[in-house]
Length: 125
Image (tube, rainbow, N blue to C red; front, side, top):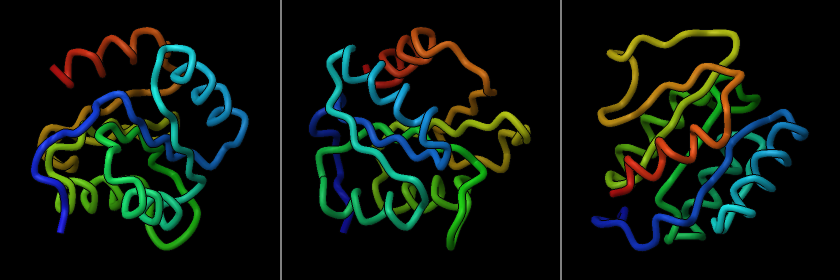
């Protein structure tokens, strides 16, 4: 059973298969005071979410290797962990808002991490 309310909004899960991008984002969010969890695919992300129940922000790329893409992962997270702040990103595809889970924001790559941090801060208030 998922959590019903946010515990700590300063915990973020980054789901990105491109390691360099993931490492750079992890450093940025860590420097901004976040506890950062990293996954290279959806299966790893789900395992982390099940283990680390304090995560309330998930940033996922759309194109991921493995059993599901980032859009399916976002729907899984919204269904299982409803209060989670969800951000879906892609540099290759643009996703219509109707395809996204409720209360999910789409971010086009490349993006400015500082601006992304401002959006997350607004979404977690």
